[in-house]
Image (cartoon, rainbow, N blue to C red; front, side):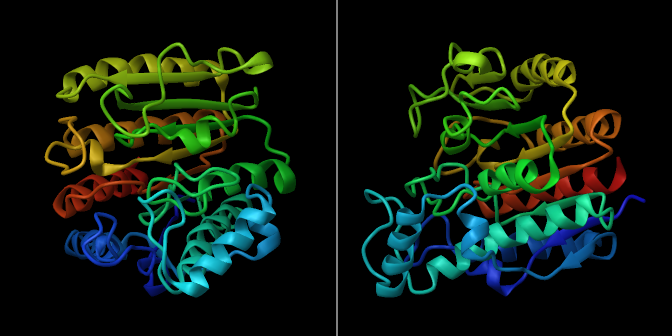
Length: 314
């Protein structure tokens, strides 16, 4: 069984910020138009968005923080953070659908109904347990990781992040957790938000050595990325994960307006193929993909659909 679930729909498309914000509500449509032109809608099981309930979100999120998100969303003005993540009416419901769709995909994978899932509007990796940040209100992948342990007894989770920005909300939430291996490849934090993710940061305490940050110099392209990716893949193989999560932000592709790496969509497809093979070897094939960042619409359409094609073909 190699069924790939694809989560798209109006409720997910509403996770986007108004008035010309880089993370606008048109991003899903850009992906979906390209997916349909490639016929990938016919090669996947298209799944409707699902909202998470409060108890599900609280596996990762602080309760007082969720109260703040609900109140700010209802007011529909101001910011969820210091100025990057503006409020809009219905923002809490949109974020709940991002997390809930991820949890629905997780359930279907663990029940054996799906082999893999891909969710272009997802991978909100800057959100912390108690705060929004960097266009991210609720950290859906954090909710997935906590749910894997709480409901399914999974003890070795691999989280791989190739978004151009360091996935600080995931990294620091699990920095001291030896059961979560993290590989994060990103533009050097000395040159880009959020200013974190240095090579010496490899985990704390019992988790020392379970995290691999690979900062890349501005201007780095596929050649440098692929060399470093082989090191990262060897690191993951040694861990033998039981479940794999990929955050494949397309903002690392050349031409993104917010960053300076110069990858092509081929790098994203390579990572997806390699992780699918790793998942087949150690995790009963179980892998979830999340779109993450990406602010050049053509790039995100190409990068994310390359990942989806790899999920289908590998």
